[in-house]
Amino acid sequence: MDEEAIPILRVTDAGRAVRWYARLGFTQQWEHRFEPGLPVFTEVARGRVRLFLSEHEGDALPDTLVYLRVRDVEAVAAEFGVPTEHAPWGPEAELRDPDGNRLRIGTPTQ
Image (cartoon, rainbow, N blue to C red):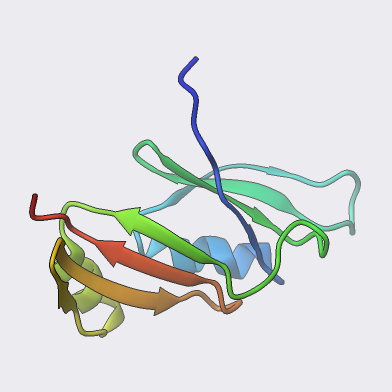
């Protein structure tokens, strides 16, 4: 098994969040509820990058920042209609998901 870190992001509506992350190329892997009507805990993945999205109030706070490295940040920026900034290590774009979680997305040039 490869070791990894998987960020947990707080969401208020997992279905809405899964659809939003699909625009970034993520696909839902699975969904869990302890029983009907209880909060959803789900995973989305884009290649080897995985995120847990949780409706459980105690799992994470809104306004979390996650950095994602992608092959083509310009395509992501175009999809969301946001500008790219040129940092010394390469272009980056900033996004906020529907729950206020921040994503800084970049394509390293080195």
